[in-house]
Length: 225
Image (cartoon, rainbow, N blue to C red):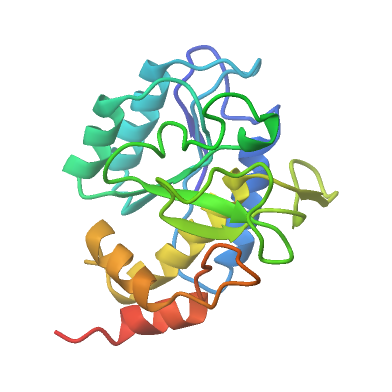
């Protein structure tokens, strides 16, 4: 679907690259799925954004009948109003847990907003060895850990490069959930958490538990009534 935007006086074009990167990755992961992807731009071309812009983006998602929202942004203030826009409409909200841990300052291992709000699925990152990525928040407050390092995507044009961050982990989670909701449209956040617990893979040398995506989708397909 064509991208839409919330910033007055600007187009939906992504000049910074993160939006393109996560959208390309999501589209690739859903290439054999009938889910529609609607990119929504909530930050200006200089990277600035306000809570009101983000809320407007969430409202546009609801207006377009989104069943799932992937939020790759992390940081800033908690915003219960944004959360309520999504949850009151029955939208499953997935958000990046943040990349602050490597900075090693204060509460750098804590999950950032929007992912730190109740009812939002917070996604942390593991590296290629299955260990918690050095930039990812720890176990507390993280709903799920998925790959978040050296992921191939394009931030514009035809060139593909490898990128790292919980933004991309959140996209992988969203693709997995979109496929699960395609077989069970009524699957909600509580149901997702229950299925995730059943689909844990074994930890790798003490790393965090990782989801077996195929098992998760199979569980969603064959849930008992």
